[in-house]
Image (cartoon, rainbow, N blue to C red):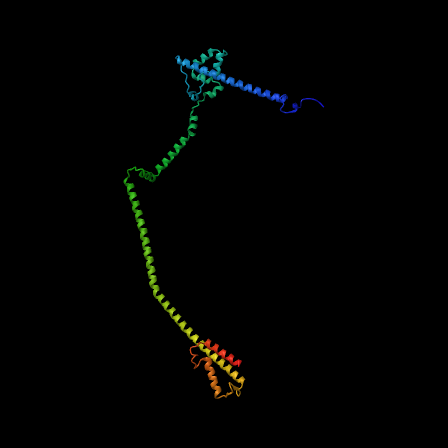
Length: 330
């Protein structure tokens, strides 16, 4: 088995080159950041010292330094003087001062003609007419004012609306005679139209009521005649119905009497004319047989019987059937 430190195989071991490289990079980064902070602090100190010297100079009666922001709105140079690079060359001795003096003696036109292409942007004015126009177009207050002006012009073109607003605000404006006359004519025309409309509605309503009354007066005799005809027809129908019912009742009574008589004759004929009946009584054609039939008919149909008066047909038929059944049983 081989020896060695097993911790060297761990990723966190500080003796590994990768870990040492990471530590070195972090230390270098921290040193760089500290150096930048020191440099920034030193610049701040220099600016503070410079401001202190300028303040002392101003207190001693020197030129006061302007701390306003006018330099932001200052117009760039139009190319009449030397540029910043040329001034720096003069200070360093790269160019002679004679050329600078010659440029000061020459007129502005010649100096502008000798300006090179690099100073073309310096000739442009920051507050040119084009820039001012673009600034004005982008101004939101200008758009608001334009909308207000357009609304005001539209109001001036509508005199009725303008007069209404003036009356609402209590502003009394002088009216011409022509305008007053037109307004009075319009009011009078509106009143006449309204009155004519009311009269038309009233006349149409009265005419409709009159037509309805005339129609009712014309329909009254017709209605009475129809009512009388209906009553007569109802009375006739009731009388006819009563007569028909009475006739039907009589026919039924006669038919029932004939049927009962036929049944009695058939039964007596079947029993024999010379036999004895009810205790040996003799039945003959002329005497007792005829009286017996009459008695049976009076019992059956209620003819001459005290209890049979006033009975209806159904009751008499029922009683007759019951007596026939008794006779058949005997």
